[in-house]
Image 1 (tube, rainbow, N blue to C red):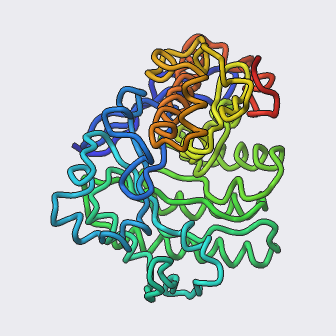
Image 2 (cartoon, helix red, strand yellow; image 1 turned 90 degrees about the horizontal axis):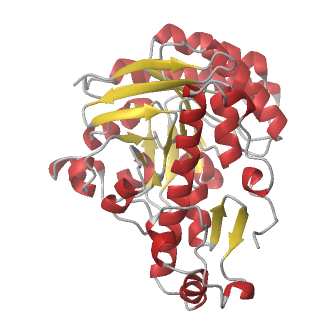
Length: 374
């Protein structure tokens, strides 16, 4: 089945829309949130638990799977879906951000990125063509081009050079891509410079990708700057194709960026915070290790219908976390992912009912602020 994106509803007061992405492994309703499954697994939870949380698509990491166990091995074993027993859609990133984060272990060239493995120090060259080859072997439904993520702050000249390199790499990736059952997305870069982002959009749209990602955000810039640039960038992208904001963010970010026209999100925030004992609720964040919960018989969030909240008390969850039991991050992750999907569902309903413009996550829940619920 070929990749397809259909717009089902639009919000008349914002740029938001409800969409349906069709892939060989099923349909995805947008706006959508994708949990991060770096090494072919969303940490601590099973595919069945993800589906119970209403997860429609997961993200896997090209860099990590290339190094271990290798894309060729995964291909031999039937591809990534079979390897990780996940029947629904998968998006793979190109590995560009992970190589970017290696800093001293990498060297950028026109050909690609030379880097040392964080596992054994072995040397590798990741080119745009190699990134496509790896993702085609993995068999993901959506693949990403190789790009360079611009650090913040960065000079205009650096951002320009990086943006132009990303475009050249995108062109090479498009030429190398062969799988007709896999969509390839371009990635808009340009740092925090509006004109460079506009330039990147123009050049990538000419290459006619099946979708477009907004990369290089949430790297230290202010929220105001981030939102301004996301809005300007999304406005220039084709309205008939999905827009994917990479690595962002808080529940409030999801609400605001859907209003700006974003369809797809991924972020480690719900899962990483869960493993650290930091839980999302409708009243604010809850730090489960705090002594105040030692005798608290209530669920994490009385309004939540997740498996964790339906079966376990704050007191028990605190005990598990303090005792360093493996069950603690698992139950916490189930709750946080369920919460994120509640936010996504709330956004979808607000679009359909024409009230997204006034939808906010005010108070502690919105920005995941310091205040804890009673």
